[in-house]
Structure formats: C-alpha cells, structure tokens
Image 1 (cartoon, helix red, strand yellow):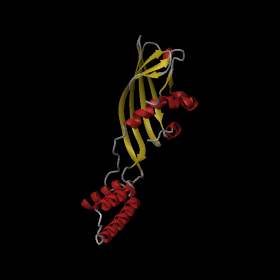
Image 2: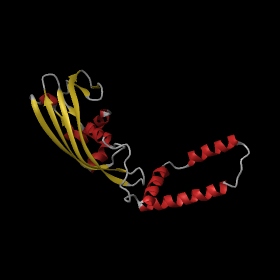
Image 3: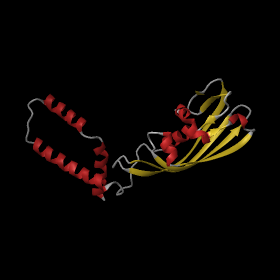
Length: 207
C-alpha cells in the first residue's frame, strides 16, 4: 500500500484521521462520504470521480486495533473499449490491523505500524486503495452503450486497414525474413486502443 502519499496533504484529509490513542476499548464507528472533491484531492490515477459511502469499524483491544471497512457506491472510470467514462459499482469489505511502534511501517498487506508518539492513523489513502483494488481487470460499457463516435472511428480505421491489406496481396517479398520484420513493425505501429474497439464492433455485428 502507498499510504505515505496522504501525509503530504494532511490538511485536506484531516477528517480521515482516527485518534487511536484516545479510543476506549471496544468498537467505534466512523462514516465517510467520498465525492468528486475527495477523488480530485487524492489524485489517484485509477479513479477521477465517484460517489462512495464508507463505514469504518474500529475495534480496540489491549494489543492492537482492528479496522473493518465496508465501502459501497459508484465511481467513474475509463472504458477499455471506447475510452469514454463509465460507471462502475463498488462493493467491497476490507480489513486492516494497526499497532503502535517507534516508526511508521507496513508489515505485509494488512498490518500497519504507526508511531505511538503520534497515536493516530489517517485512512484517506487506504480508502482509495481499497476502491481501486475492487475495479475489475477488464471494465467496459454494456454492449451498445459505448461511444458512437469511437465506434464510427473504428469502422473507418478497419476499412482503411482492409484496403491496405488488399493492396499488399499484390506484393511478393523475396526475403521471408524481411516479410516477418515488416509484420512486426506493422503490429507495433497500430494503436493498441483499437483492439478493444474491434471487439466492440464484432459484438455489435453479431447482435
């Protein structure tokens, strides 16, 4: 986790600081509404906008603090197919264990050590990371919901490629190795973003 980022802007995220040292033993509940301002200020690369509600249950024991996160809402991210914004539902439950020590440290994925002299933890960046980790590896609009402008550009792109391939059929290369190098170079120059849009076009044609 990259929780250090948030400490450079504590002023903006002071509401997300939990005073662990002042808590009595037992369970304490914190709730947060993460809106567009939050996502703008956190400056995370994966999620530019959103409307998410987070409940954080903090249980204090004699040895450590157990933080349980229940995060639900909707974020706006970029569609892999058409590169336009799309809504993505978020519903995730996560957990952190926190204990006191001499210095801040991250021991594994879910154990955080915070300086006992300070006695608190800011969870703003942890909330963001739990949301970002909940985004599917492949995130696309439902079929038929992608940008019509991008679909139109893809059709023109595919038509252009088809014309070039027809012309290339009349060309005979004497050197097979040269032919292979040319194919590799052509693949490298094709914008990889078109691959997702080709999938979209195929799906539309099949419906």
